[in-house]
Amino acid sequence: MTLILNILSESDASGIQYVSWKNNHEIERYINGNGDLDVFVEPSHRAAFMSVAITKGWVELANPVAQFPSVSHFYRAGSEGRVYHLHVYFSLGTGESWLKEYVLSLERYSPNIFHVW
Image 1: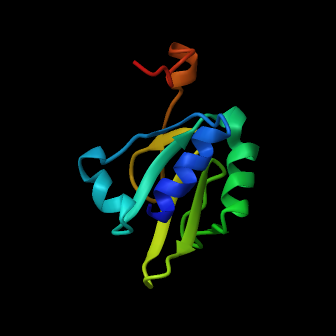
Image 2: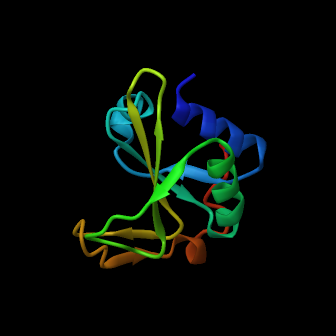
Image 3: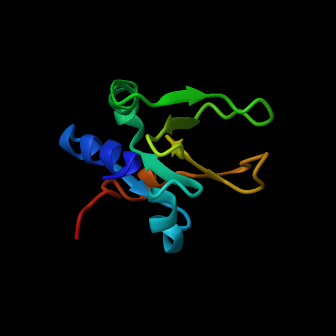
């Protein structure tokens, strides 16, 4: 199991609601450590997710060029020398990479966006 699948499985076990929200056509690539996986975590589960990430050995690092209070970057080195990267959003902001000028407040329109079909 890759390190990304491991943290997502632990998040599931902890009841943390999350969803991969961008570039899902390349999700297998990201899960295997080739690029960063973009994950939206329910804002009320932020502390729980941070706790799981730290417990699982992930390190949060700041991007010195573009910092957003609702976006965290987590990294973890794998035993095979590959670096895994999670781009974790606690609010859905999109737009120009360095601006994130559009905030999508889905929670207001859909109280249960994490519903499993």
